[in-house]
Image (tube, rainbow, N blue to C red; front, side):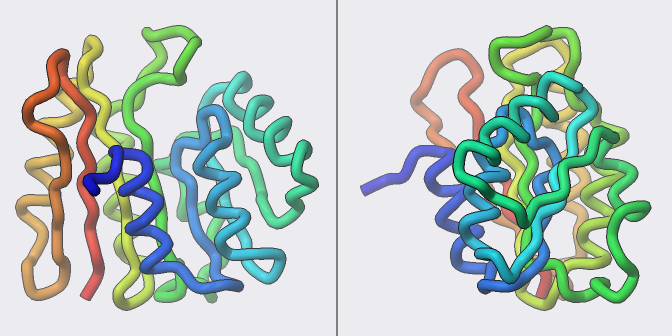
Amino acid sequence: MLKSILNYAHYLIQQSVAKGETVIDATCGNGNDTLFLSRLVEDEGHVLAFDIQEKAIDNTKEKLSEELRHNVTVIQDSHENIPKYVDPKLTGHIGAAIFNLGYLPKSNKKIITHPESTIAALHEILKILKKNGLVVLVIYHGHEGGKDEKNAVLDYVINLDQKSYKVLRYGFINQKNDPPFILAVQKK
């Protein structure tokens, strides 16, 4: 059966990540992906979770505390600053990363991800990703500014060297109202 967007995003990451690895949630939002990643890498692994909004940070910490997850560092900063927080020894060893682009659900719809910071973060993550590692971007674009980010990110990934990366687009084409879709970038 066809998987929903978020289920497929998680399925792809499960194929890439091993127990004990370090992974990144570039937009932790309400903490759902952070919790998924925390469980996936188990106690031996580590998750770096980023968001610019205090509400997202609080939501994520609360979700993690409900399950007593202690293998996560939650960071209130833009994902474009990821290199400041990743130990250089981990270069080439990051298992995966996930982005949910758009705005924090049930929050201020004016606070959104932006093409410049998203592309900067994606560029930096690709440099530190392991061989066969994966970055999954869930692109919500049905809001003001969403189309600009969608187009900029598409332009960026379409132009990645096919000798170094595989890029997949997954989405439902018969849904109304700008349905979200996935871009997955695998490092060769």
